[in-house]
Length: 370
Image 1: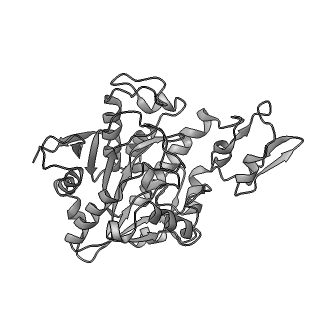
Image 2: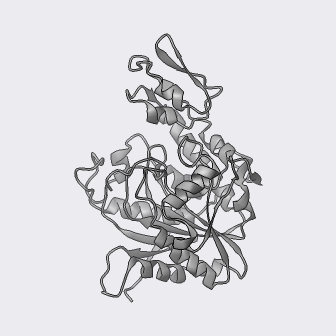
Image 3: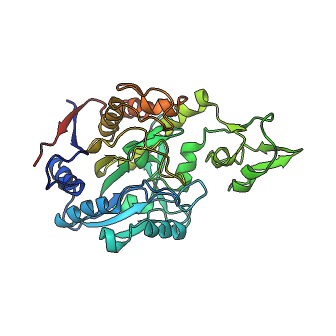
């Protein structure tokens, strides 16, 4: 039997509707409220956005879920885990400061902010999963201890995963720094010596101190490299790249196994927001132009089904011109591969189904106007 995915289009066809009312209706219609029991400590998992990004989830949207959880007797808190890459989320002090700067403070959302893996990303436990790549995975401590979780995701593109949806939010977002390193461990960036000018920007940003400048060229020590690919982002000469055919499919499978571990044994609901659908993840310190029009909001208890439905809805749209979408602009064509042509993000979905994370078959239930 296919999983049910509830959908509310972005367009408003009645004067008394709003995006806020759509979120509240979706929460009720999809049964997410049934996941919350009285006095549950309920984690609302989201990404607060890297400093410089401005298309992260609207905190007012988050407030609607907070209020719904409180109405069921739960005690909600907003949560994310520290990042592997350098930036404004790689320790709890900077991370919380960024969250408040972006409007996620109590006065707007009605919920406290918690960084799930502690001050420096060291608070975690393990879940046994016995999968191909990992017998155990690491999960941030406060998410292990939460009674239930609502995962709110800005569904957008991602350079390595193809797209970032509920699966990636579970995998990377619920992992401590060491767990993020696990998922990146197969990524081995390489230096193109013909392009490298030895400027040192890659060495300067590398937190693992894995890069040195020797004889006017950068050199990477892969025994120290964490695979965060900050160096690739920092390089202005496009002199650093990955082996896309070897590394990326394995990366997505390891990421999906981590998602399985984060979800194991938990009552979890998912909301995907297909709004401001940018080429890049909210972890980037910028927000490029959206590649398709705003589509709507989806809700489900199945992370694989909601990501598959989200991907199908994005691909169904006509691409927007004068954006980073350089090909596949016609309805029905693969939009994210029109941006990231080396990456097939659907491997998250097929592998997620293989390991029992969810189903790729879904019934899309569109909410009627009210």
